[in-house]
Structure formats: C-alpha cells, structure tokens
Length: 69
Image (tube, one colour):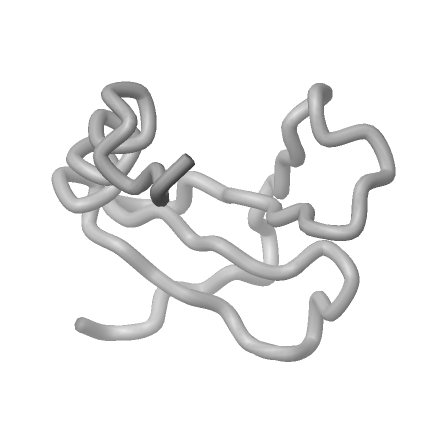
C-alpha cells in the first residue's frame, strides 16, 4: 500500500482519552485511515484501508480483542 500524503491530515483523538498515557490519533485521508501515537507523533504512522479499519472497530465493539478477565 502506498503511503498517503499526510501533510494536510486532520488528526483526531477520542475525547474519552483525556490526557491518558495510551492515546492514539486517527486521520481519514484519501481512501485510508492513518493512526499514530499521540506522544510520539514523529515516530511513525500505521495506515489501513477503510475496510480493515471498519473490521477492527467492529471487533473492538464486540470484545473480540478483550483479554482474559
């Protein structure tokens, strides 16, 4: 997958994350979703197709990634 131009990306962070230590930001750019660490914005960016992102969010909502209690 090619790296999109993120220079004009509008990054967003969940309002529920406040200033917690484990925050990520997302940007919807062209036909992909970019994700980066809020604390290390220059440390790299993960890029996902929109269908991959949708599947991931669906898994989060259904508890697919929850570990043992």
